[in-house]
Structures are given as structure tokens and as C-alpha cells.
View 1: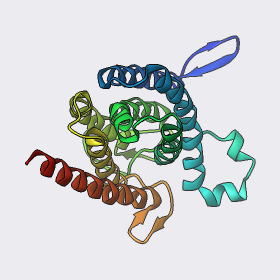
View 2: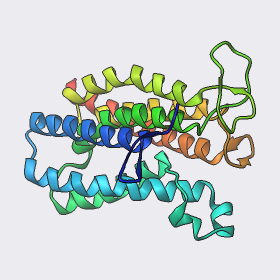
View 3: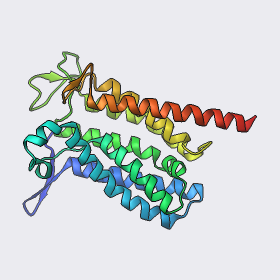
View 4: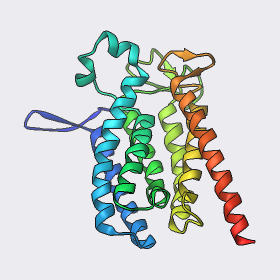
Amino acid sequence: MDPIAFSIGGIDIYWYGILVAIAFLLGYLNTQSNVKRYGLDIDAVGDLLFKLCITVIVGARLGAIVANLDYYLRNPLDMFTRAGLGSHGAIITTMVMGFYWTKKASLPYWTLADAIAPSLSIGHIFVRLGNFINGELFGSPTNLPWAVEFPYSDGPVHPAQLYEMLASLLILPFALRWARKPKYPGYAFFRVMLIHSIVRLLIDFIRRHSETIGPFVLTQIIAIGFIILTAVLLFRAEIKYRKGES
């Protein structure tokens, strides 16, 4: 499939950009719906979400640079000219800056994280579809019936992008339900982050586009860190919630 959707005045419009824009729009609308349901300050949250949208893009770019740091140290100008985004960079940067901005705006951090939680699944669905159309982030060689051959894959490979997209489609209904009525702050976010991190850890065993560190690539090490962190936070929150119930 041609990565270019159409051209306007000699400017190419890529499917990837269109899909990312759709993901942002749907994520924003769903978050606003949850914010209203929670009774949070709509104006304050709207201003914060605008900042977070920019932070997602900047963080994703930083994530791609860090994941391929050796290359960019050798070719520093490519930091500004070469395409590429990293989901972990977007998540980490957004969480850090979100913590600062929610405190400044007197908004509950984990409650807002719950409102945003389904956007993680929405983003993965559309971004991974865009990766598939671009012919990037594919998996290892395979002869399975559903193997796909991309321009740079040197033969049939696992469509790892579609694996993650399909996993995200399965996670999304649960994310929407958890975020609709979270039992406690962080209820939806912890669960969504934990499941997506497990999916990323597993899929990256067949999608290795950076140097290994022991048995793992960098993105798997980050995913393991997220798994441990969210599992601990989820366990503590559940214990606290159940004690409050009894």
C-alpha cells in the first residue's frame, strides 16, 4: 500500500499522519467525555490536554532518538530531518509533565490519568496501522500463512504492527469500561498500562530493530520497568481500596 494518501499543491499527505491525527481526535473526545463524567474543571483540563498533545509528539520524537542513540550521535542532523516516533518516550514525557501541570492546576493526577487511559489503546491502534502502511517496525522472518513482505524486509516477515494493533483492539473495550467508572484513582490507567506493557514486551521478541542488551532490546527493558511499576501501584491501590470497603 502506498504510504502517501494524496498530494495537495505538491505536498504529500501520508496515511501515517492522517491516522495519528485521528488518534489524537478520538483520544481527546473520549478524555473530555470522561472528564465531564468525573466532574473535573473542563476549562482547566482542556488547557492541560492541549499541552499534553504537544508533549506527546515531542516525547515520542525523543523516545525514537534515545532508542537509536548510536545512530543519531553519528548523524546529529538527522535528529531534525529523519522521521520516527517512540511510544515509550511519549508516555514517559507525558507522565512527567502531566504530574507537574496537574499539580499547578490543582487537578487530581491519577484521576486524570484514568480519563486518558483509553487513549493509550486508541493511539496504539492507529499508530500501528500507520506503521504497517509505512512498512516499518515489522517482525522477524516467517513462513506462516499471514506473513507479509515489505519493501525493506528481504522476504516474508511477521506483521508485528498488526499483532499490536489487534491486541490494542481487544484491550480498548476494557479500557473504556474501566475509565467510565473507576473504583479509585488510577484504576483504569494502571490496568491499561500493565496490559499494554506486557504486550509490548512479548511482541518485541519478534520485532528487534535496535541492539540487544542481554536478552532484551531497550524497549523491552522499558516495558519491564512499566510492568513492575504499574503492578506495584495496582497492588497497593487494590489493597487500600479493599481495606476501605471492609
